[in-house]
Length: 378
Ligand code: COS
Image (cartoon, rainbow, N blue to C red; front, side, top):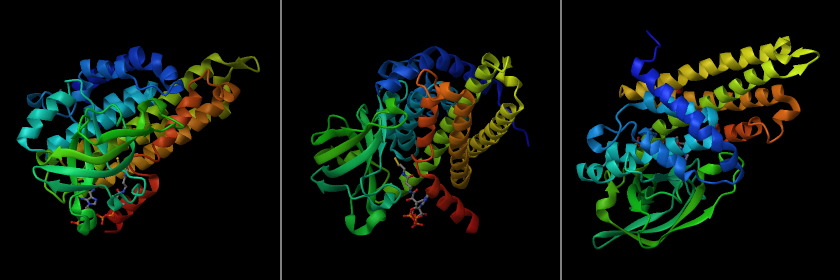
């Protein structure tokens, strides 16, 4: 068994690293402070082809696979977790169409949401259906050639900016989660509006919004897959999305380690750089080891997915581990920075807040333990 990135993967890492340093790092503090969605940076990610990764060139995408996607998300997250999260979650729309859409839907939507500059979103969560995703109550009832959708989705990343959103709604409420279906809702659909945008602790720039469907009308041809397949589609998509969050968490932890190394060489106390202090050296050793472990779990899950092999358990394990590690490492990094780490002048305070969400979104750590335990126990 060989664990080695290909030359092409090394190259994309260089490109993503340069992008992160030149485009994501300079705006990270400002967009966090102002909770401002980075519209211009998103356009630049489109120009670099990042939004098209994982979608074949014949559908307007950039090609590449889950490993490529993780590399880009990881590198950007080292500098700005919100920008990395936007990229990662935006990609779910295209993956959903690619995996479950008709040929007509692939031709219509994929060129637009990959390298065409349009935004996609994925709306599953509802106020009373978070971890219990199957308890969703949004309905889509047939009327003539259309679906009429009623309900509210919440905590939707990039929802306010999305040109198209995949909405999970009950086409047959009597069947519970087996009556859920995936439907594409364009932003100009009659009866669709954006509700509250959340004021968050971290990844403040990724704009998390409520979506309201009040007799929202969309054509039945916007159904993705078959009626009743929505829950399975959502679960399969989440298995992939969790690898993206794990890559984001890994990037945050690596960014925190980088900041700590730099600071320990610069900061002088007791007449010498604090890098000389063995207590802090041990912190660095622990952080580096745990990051390495998180890294290989992330890329193992991505590699299984890229090969079309089962990856649900490995994705859950990678995300559980990488997110807990991101919290652990950002906390130690902040400690190394002492009082300065607690101040907004240094990025550790932001990184620590950003790390927390990775233990919550795309499934909480507790949900991942459920998924893992079910797989292990059989
Ligand atoms: N891939 C494919 N199918 C899956 C699946 C997966 N990863 N997970 C579940 N399913 C299928 C099951 O096989 C079952 O189908 P059958 O009845 O045909 O066998 C169906 O979906 C229902 O599964 P299950 O009984 O496990 O559903 P539960 O209600 O117990 O829910 C959890 C399972 C808790 C894992 C699920 O609700 C979940 O992941 N919740 C978290 C949601 C989440 O991550 N939200 C974050 C934000 S989303 S934007």
